[in-house]
Image 1 (tube, rainbow, N blue to C red):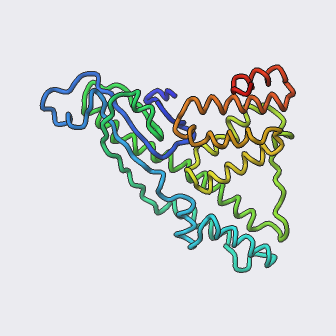
Image 2 (image 1 turned 180 degrees about the vertical axis):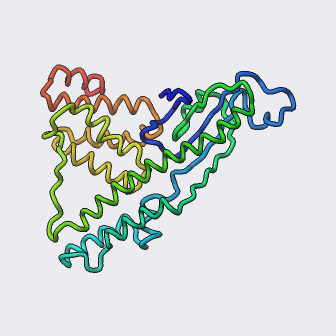
Length: 289
């Protein structure tokens, strides 16, 4: 994606990965003996930073309340339901206040280290977000760009992360404050009941949650559960397993896996619409005979 001042060679600005490679291209070679020559390979000045493993939702609950997201919160919710109220459970207002206070007290580190890349093709295959900052005629401005961009990147990444954290915590607090008894039934549609552009909904709303959540995280597990719930009426359960199985390859940007997923989504849509002609064509593309 071309953002004018910079261009994403890999990744999605709306769902930042938290791992960044920022690259500035020098249009002319540095003079012999230039002090910046040790940082440049070919014509590329590149830096990398990893911001994804700092202050996640799990860290928040562990440090603020001594709980693990995976077990502690569910146990608290169950305890509250059994007691018919919030006795012995978390105070939702306290959780929200601690979450708000994080923004007032956090000073975010801006680590980025110089790396040597053999070329833009090699850079585009890296994990995480890879951003080309443009062409520079002078080293000092290229150096300024690779030092300053990680600050902007981390600000946007943290903002997205904090918003996601708020949404997840609010969802947990809604469970915590719901009346005792069975948890409320999901109001989300399924493959069978969805009204609208089904292919777009799957590719843009349901599946990306599995691609962009940190691997093996509670967020990733929630996203997979949401996908499986949506696809539960699918007549080919094996296709659902194939789609889930493609997620690790798609995380690594493998185009063949992306193509396979798109075909499987279109197959599900064709089946739902009883479009047998399209279904036959897609089955051939998928090598199903």
